Image 1 (cartoon, rainbow, N blue to C red):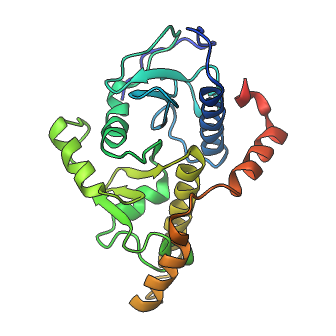
Image 2 (image 1 turned 60 degrees about the horizontal axis):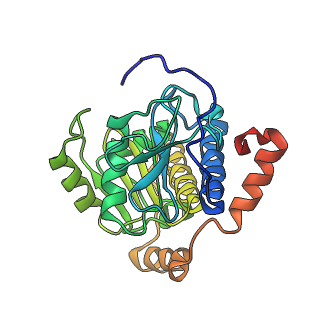
Length: 258
């Protein structure tokens, strides 16, 4: 973690943006605001990254030093896969923090959006030997579809990058042991809804375990069938939820669109 001062302000425009890029900026800024609204943020740390449409190898990420409730469509920073800023910007980015995202974006053609958080419930469940239990309907969304990666320290090396993407494989979500959660989405909405579902599952598990009694879990046949139902043939998640979430943000503070 770095505590270097980063000036606050608007990003300098480096040229006209396509409608697709602008929409991605609005959606990504909304995801940051929603994370802050739910209390899932961690000071100025963690990231949500999104690919820039029709610009292979370019991504959007938060300005390092701003809290998530300060993120706007206009101040998201465009970078390449190595974390170098593309165009003009008043901001810096956390290149070390982007390394996990870069590895996933590079390895997965479907990784349009990668969300990585240090939410308390997610970290707590990641530290449990059994990880996420199939103890709720929310958890069953990830039955046999949740990856795990053991903690290797702060420095994210190329060798660890290979191990992480190998562990993630084609799964939609991961628990990084002792560290946090990660989701991969074909849209910003999908990555967000997957994260919301995963964190809800973690919260339910922790509250259920708090009483000290054994947990009731469905048998494998029921868990498998339910997971297939929730997978819904591979439909993109978040299509219905996202417009409702944007309306909620618009009622509270529409400045994320700026």
